[in-house]
Image 1 (cartoon, helix red, strand yellow):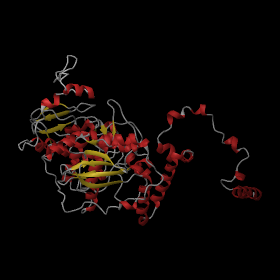
Image 2: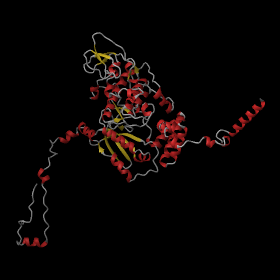
Image 3: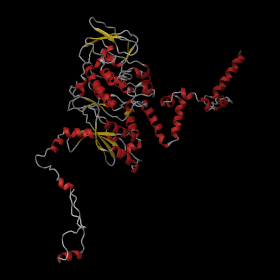
Image 4: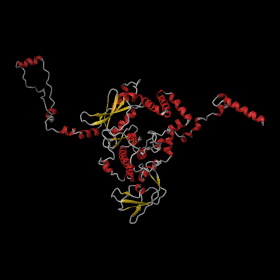
Length: 558
């Protein structure tokens, strides 16, 4: 027994001396043991493994190492390795050092856009002018993103989306002239004015305007993909608009798009999983915003909570958000999934078939008008949009899930089958008259103080270092010509009418604007033929008549 213990301990010490990761601790046949199969034998893996970046290049250690090695072989991809390293440093930095790390990341990896107020000299109208440095765009290869934002803004004409009126360029910069929004962004209002969050009435009003904005974007086949409080701006009166369409993309008719883009904590599960989608991420984002406006923090990450990206994404895909007493039942139902329909009955109500998909159920209306799809089946006391009557539901399909904005499955999510009309019909918006809202006839619940500045201390733009080693040449002219196209037709026409310039131009009482002489514009005088010295001399002597010959054409009018 003692001999066995001595032998075992000897082998243990020998193995420990070899050390993990040292060659002398390996078996002599280690290569044969770790011999990988041929590529042809791994063809089935192509169909079974996840092919997105997060799975291949982040979660898997060997995949992460291979990705870094691949990027290191190409000069244009080395910067991505550097970006991953500085982000890792930022995540573990102390609170007092985080601001410096953040400014360094912005300076090195992102184009800094400076925004200032400007005024059109011809009309006097005020705008916000977004300045994009040409060298920063070129260094970060941001031409496609800048041009995409310009084209998306140019395409949309909505009172709920920041509008683009002009684009122009100077020697060093490109400029977007946008709707001016002096009321600050929603993030500032949520977290810096009193206790975090809004009262429900204010939150639902903003949600209704966001719903209209998303509807206008979807009419142009645009999915926004970056709905968050920072991108929602307030104007002087208190109405909101969606801004920053840099991540927006056009969805071709009858097709889907794919892309893992957005902001952590607001990306929908299908975006995180890199699945195909159309407009479902925007309805998820609306649910996140409603929750944050009422609760005072986002549904899957508390304000200033230090949590890794992977954990937030896991919560989005797996966890159910928690609701406090701040939420009414309608506000809860528009955000979270509820199972089954409430069984309600009342005497004297006429029953008919319910439009709920799947199993059949019964619903009733006082005047027989149809409920909008299946939404009223989830409320026992919802107004009929046509006649103002009440709708009372009784349903037999207890196992049917009521759709909501934060439903994980996009096929069951509110708005993904019936569009904006389905969302507008939810009982949470029962006090909103959408026709008046779209006509700008409803007063917002909050009006910004014109003497207040609704933002934190603005980072001095001089803190961003000068871009070095980047030179502009003629190869960039194509991009600049596509970007700087002058005025945008519809906003320009509205500006001419609102400023009174159109009326003043067309007034001719002073006689300043006189109609052009039609005769002058249509006459094309024939130039006189050149005559030599002898011709002029003989004509003076009377030898040549001044009447044109048959070969000479008289001046004619058209």
